[in-house]
Image (cartoon, rainbow, N blue to C red; front, side, top):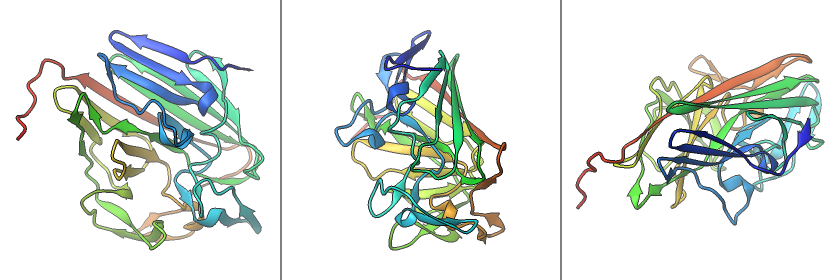
Length: 282
């Protein structure tokens, strides 16, 4: 494998996708019929733009601390006072081929493992897979963090997210371990029981539907210029919820043994709405 600082560009019809292996293996740009739907950069840093894989955990870990099989682990505090979004979103990934990227878990995570991400541009959509191959026993949560533009050409996004339950947050903004009925937004919350594909619609511009093998979705709608709908294999702070359940649902991470693999996929389907009538606005 060799490392590349050159973005990878895939095209299909009027869709152009740019992948930045040197910037966390993220989807850096996705233009559909000329409409860019992703946030393509941020002065606040790599956490706040594009669509990047999260591993070996997703979301926050409380104070960056957890215990695994007798070992006390302290992680870097990417969002003080908590660790956040794994350790690979700000690192270069190796380019294996024009759709495959790979990296290893670094020293800030005390368990050895390898990650492989594959991106396939399809007619009217894309599919991304992420695979964590454990070399040591470890707890693991993987997922993706897309930053979508709140508006395109002045048209604000409409979000459809139907879920049976969400995790109640405590005073630190982290899951308290209790499932409750979903509340109206704005959100910075983890949802489960999502049976219909979450949908983002910029009327008259683009419609996007998301599917995933992940059973958790985190929605973040508190930023004025962007929204996030994030598929995750486990909830935020899953390592500290290990062994706990709510309404019969295990809240902990996957527990991998050496040689085992955690793999999930995320699929986007879209349609350009150019030429369709937009709803009248007051």
